[in-house]
Length: 114
Image 1 (cartoon, rainbow, N blue to C red):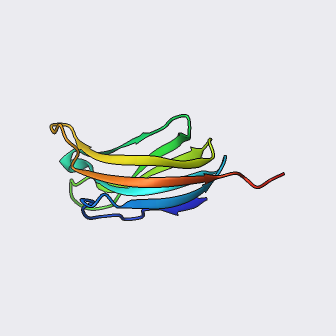
Image 2 (cartoon, rainbow, N blue to C red):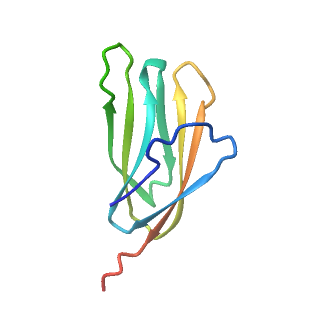
């Protein structure tokens, strides 16, 4: 299982694209920080014929205050070989535009079994 993007904080104004290598039919994960107290929510956008969202979990950071922030983990599976774009937008309920964007290029390779 491949993992990418752990604790990716900061701005992505340059729209840097991060490459992730995946194997057809095997899961890979992406971790992003989210502050739900501020209303933040990462929303993925991708070709559903090429990638499948397998799981979406939020792990709250333990603290003694009312802040609800933590790590959001998205688990995807590549179902079509090739290079596919996966875009995450940090949305807030009261804004029309995204607060931040993270772009990943997922390179799905055949399983190699044969």
